[in-house]
Length: 423
Image (tube, rainbow, N blue to C red):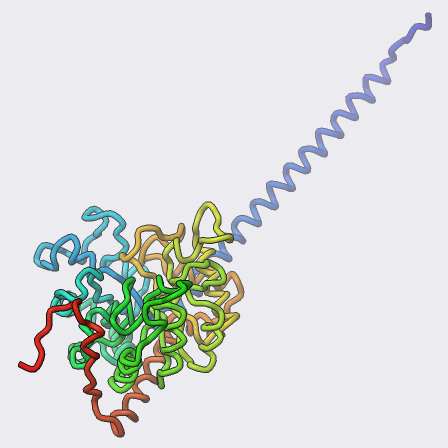
């Protein structure tokens, strides 16, 4: 059997190889550490730079959100008794799912807000007019109570006036045509009180319009707008009240677009193609925005931005940005805005937990390549343009058209509401 004799040279060679390997490993580790040391600060710097850019843009153009249900929280939990509330404090300890208070509005750089005057559909045919008046009242009262923070606004230029004064322009949007009790006179009185948009329906049909739940039914109740419903749209045009088509059926959307002479808004709706909920806006309606020149204001509610075959286990800021991207691509950059629906919903995306987080969305869109001008349009310029055009249409119509005094046919509300006739 052959024998193997180990020499001293082999030991030296082995030690040299181990040292060389150790040096290589140490070199790799040093290189990785250097890369991390350089890359992480650069990444953080880019994030800081993008956030700085977002905040700068928000300091130049008012962020106009199309829909916030904070007044409904005041009604639901405190019966609109503002004396029991300090809106300048953190509201989160007071009730679940709190999205809005003055400190967070300031942190989120909100420039103007359409506050929703909303009451539930079970008030229809009963006390809906009185209860909606109560919601208009509470909005005007909290604006007056905090004059250093809020400024009541009823015009497009008023949004800029409030913004330049460092205040949050406060507008009223009435959420649901059931507020009218089918009366054009009531519509005019709400306008005189400062209401500047009306959502044609909430989640219930009115006697003259179908809501979103009628979409897809074989026999919808009205198949869109009735003749009287079309008169409601015309009178809104004459008054200068924005026509809000969130919550209505697809057919009602098209009927309203066929009738209106002014641009429409969707105060808090997203893209149906990405989330196939019938509260959202289908592509054929998005395409019509190019002609109508309206604006679709993206809703942040989880169930309207992450659903259907595209649903993912978690919902985050990227879903909202996807809807902004999609509407910008299909309708155009001039026809997209934001209507978060804060304090009207329970589930909101990670990264957009409340009104303080709007800058996060601007940062996300900047990362996606949105230009400064596109960001400014989304922030508020698109809505302000729509508002100005609606005012222009109103001025022209008021010169040539008397207030409409048509009454809804008695049979349309028979056995539904308590009314007196010919007395």
